[in-house]
Image (cartoon, rainbow, N blue to C red):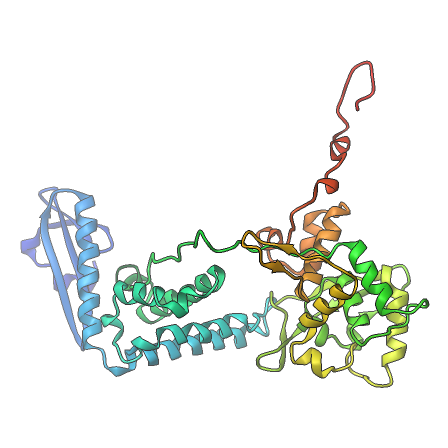
Length: 408
């Protein structure tokens, strides 16, 4: 038994053995709980003897930990008010991202930006001590109109950072009992429309390509090459914007590929690691001739990057350009349950790439690697609803067995 524990246990306690952390068996077969914590420079002890059941002893231990943690928080100074505490958490996220840049899996900037954005909805707590913030404060924040107006996914990510901020400041053990956001989760709004992937089908995209190119496939619009490249590589807009000429390998006509290393962060206007933090390779052998012609056209105006720097693209006009192109070819958008038109945007080119590969029979693990998704759960969010004609005759793929006649 350690010297520190011995100071809290006297011969009157008649301790026989230590069973678990803070729980001891007494000579009479019953249990004793002793929990200590240094508060304001002094060791404070909570003790109870002659507990009949081990389950009861564990509950008492939880209560003692909670009480001592509450006392500890009351004695802490202003550095643990919410505004300063959350800044410490954000600095921790920043440091984690910076430290990861030399690892095999560097982190992207998304977590840092989301953490900063989440603080806006907790500003009413900024002068409260951590110990003064209760679950009622958290529920009050969740019921505010500006927070309720957010989509389910955004609210879920913001709550995750708020929960982790408390855990970071309090520590894992105290967080279990004191974290006001612990086990507080965002309920899904039944009236909220589920995300619907907008698949720009090949027959629609072919019309756009024909409209935006001449008979020799020379671009007639500044958006032509960008749309073509995004549709047939599935790369994100920021990844294409940061793509350098050295990342595009077109030397081998049998194996041409793009190495996706970075992305352009539109908010900070900086080039950072990809969203997943990992590099990936995208095959472009099928569009090699187009890309060679593109490189010849743009080499004079842009030496470093594969695509010229465009002011409208950088200012977020790519989505509007996609919609304008669809309108020009007579595209009719789908509607949601409320009758709202669902127009594809630039990111829909990425979703279309995924759907085109999956419907062409490419295994989902291969698609997942090509687009840089960490798991299948992410990939499945990009799958669109199939039309009846898409599944016509698919049962023939099963090749049903019969004895004396051909199936079908």
